[in-house]
Length: 102
Image (cartoon, rainbow, N blue to C red):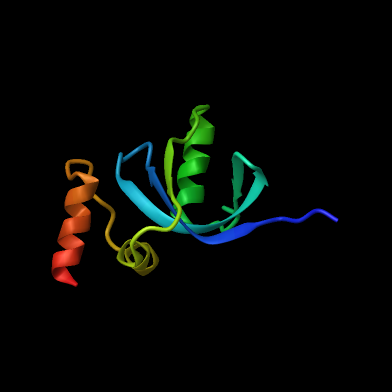
């Protein structure tokens, strides 16, 4: 019997190819091999999936950053549907602003 290992709190950071807005989401993933993970992006309303479909329509790979672990506040912001980071703002500045305001 095959054993699979899941992680449920992966922070996925991706950019909308049309607006260049950086968006965060939390997705469950499964190890396929020791060096590969498979992400569940089947929900039709999640921005990660919507961005992926846009990249697919353009025939491009979707660049993403995956955070395993990390600060709880970042995950809460992703769950809360915090406003997307404008393309002119650096990600670190957005984290700092959120921490100041919470």
